[in-house]
Image (tube, rainbow, N blue to C red; front, side, top):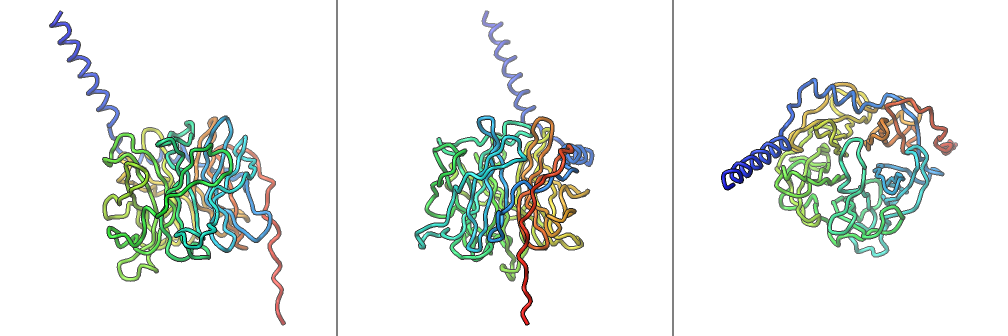
Length: 376
C-alpha cells in the first residue's frame, strides 16, 4: 500500500510539473507566427463612423469596449476645449451606440491635480481573444487608469497617471472615485529620459503568471528626451503593481521606440497563445502617413516583436483622411471589430470601426463643418 501511494504521489508530481511547464512554455515568435496573427486580426472592411459629436463644439476619442449582462459598453473621451472627460455608451450589436453619461468629470475643486483632464481607460479586462471581454474586479472594485492634469487645452500641461475605481455597476453612468494623488508622474525620481516630460494613455492587465513578479502590469506612453524633454518622442513602457495603488516602473528602457513622432496607446490581448499589443504610430521617420494602427507580438509581456507589414488601420476615407488611430479590438461571433479614432481634415473627431467581415456601411456622418467667413 505504501509503495502504491509513493508511486501515486510521484506520478501526480510529474503531472503537475509537466502541466506547469506547458503553462509557462514560450512560443517562438517567428515570421510565420507574425503572419498568422496578422491574418487573424486584420479588418479590411471599414464600416465607418459609429459615434460622432452632435455639433462642432467637442470631439470624441479613445474607445474602450467591454461586455456585461449580454450588452456591450464603451468608455470614451470627450474634449470640449477645456480638457478631457470620460463618458459611457451602450450597444446591443457593437455598431449602434447610445450615450449614457459621464464617469469622470471636471473637478469643482480647482486645487485637485486632475481638475481639467480625466482621460480614462478600463483596467483588468479579460484579455482572451474572442472571450468574454468582461471587466474584472479587484478588491471588490472596478478600476480605471487615466491620465490627468490641471491645465486647460488639448493634452496640455504636465499630464500624470491616476487610478479611479467604483464598487457600483460600471454599466451605469456615475462618477468614479479617484485616488487623491497620481500614481506615476514625469517628475518621479525613477523617470527615464523617455518619460520625463508628460504622460498619456495607460492600459492595465493582470499578470496571472507573475512573469514580471507582480500582479499587475500597466503599459503607458509618455513623451521625453534627454536634452529637450518637451520636444521628445512618445514611446511605450511599463510599470507594475501588486495593489493597483502603488506603481513602480519596470526597467529603464521603453518597450517600443521609434525615436521620432508617437508610438502609443497600447492595448493587450491574448491571441493564439501569444500576447498581442495593438498600438498606433504617427509621424515616424520615413512614413508619409499621419497616424495609423499597428501591432507587436510577445511571449513574455516584456519583449515585443513588431509587425513589419501593412498597417491594420490607416487613412483611406473622407471621415478619417487626417488620422486613423488609437485601437480597441474585439472578436465576437467570429467577426473582428477594430474600433479607432477617426479624424478628418476639418479636424472633426469621432469613433469608427473596421471589421473582418463586410457588414455594410454606416449611415452616420460628421455634422456639417463650420463655415469659415473671410474677413475683408
